Length: 254
Image (cartoon, rainbow, N blue to C red):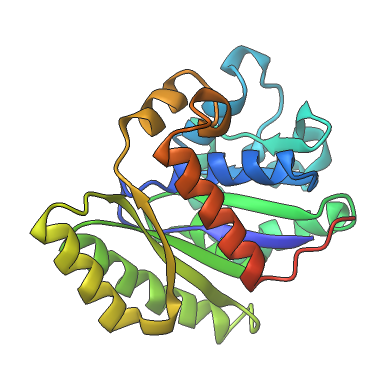
C-alpha cells in the first residue's frame, strides 16, 4: 500500500478538496483506496458519508488500537476511516504515550495488504495528528494557495518533514507541491507561482489547479468534481494532477 499525506499547516489551501478528488479519481481508475481523515473538523468525512451513518471513527481506532472496525465502505474501491471532533482529544490523550508519533503507522500494518493506495487528509496545524500522518506515509503532497503567506506555511511544514525524516520515517519525501485556487490573470498569482518555482524548484508539479467555483459546489453536494461537472476545468486539472502523481510514483494495483 502506497501512502500519501495531503498536508499544509495553512488553512484554506484546498487540502480536503484535493484529497476528496484524488481519492475519487483513483478509485474510478480501479485502485483500491483507503481514505483517512486526520482533521478533527471532519470535512473530508462529510464529503463521503453522513454523520448519522458513522459508527466508529479514527479516534476509536487510536483508543482501541484497531483500525479495521473504523473503516466505512463507500464502494468496492473506496473505503474511509472518518473523523469527528473527538479526534482532537488525541493531542492530549496520547501525548505521554511511548512512540506517540507512530500510532497511525502501527495501526496501518493490519491493512497494509488490503489496499493499493492510502490518502490521508491532515489538519491545518503541525500537531501530534499531523506528525502521525507524516510518520506513516511514503510521500507528502502539498497544496499551495496563491498567496505569499501560504509559501511561508510550506516552509514551516518542510522543517517538520525534515525532523520526522531524521527521527522516525527515514524514507519520507515531499512528492510534490502544487498550486491551487490559481487565477492566472492576476499579477499576484503569477508572482506567487514564479516565487514558488524559484524556492521549491524540482518539487513543484506542472499541474496547476485553477480557481473554479464548481469545485466548491461539488463539495457541497458531496460529489467529486468528476461526477458533478466532468467537463469542467476543475475536473481537467485534478485529472491532470492525479496522472502527474502516477507518473512520479510506483503505485501498483493489487
